[in-house]
Image 1 (cartoon, helix red, strand yellow):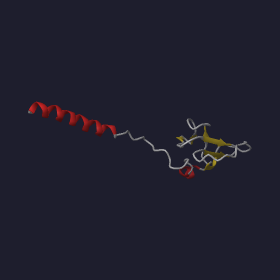
Image 2: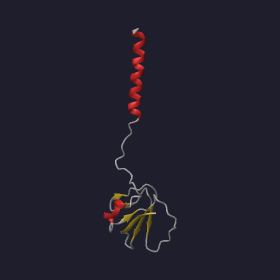
Image 3: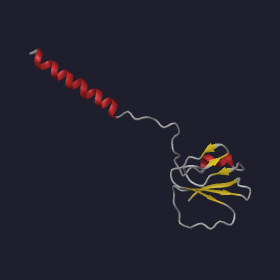
Image 4: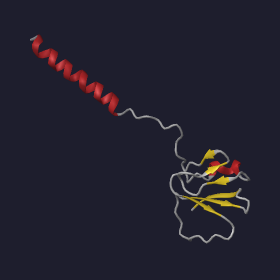
Length: 104
């Protein structure tokens, strides 16, 4: 009878081990924002903006976290009027400093 119990116990232990690790996922170092990321940038008004895409945009020395696209808008730039909830719009002045951050 012990011959039948051991394989069953081994199978049960393997299933429990797999289940435990299947649901564990690594936590990112910084979670994406719940909105487009504009709310977190209120304290960054006046800081220099560098880069033009979600991958390379920085405010000061800090990378910008956004759920979607990032659009840097300088004075006089033409932009589309479509509203994209996840898009982060960074409005800058002529010197390249952040004047406003908003979703859309």
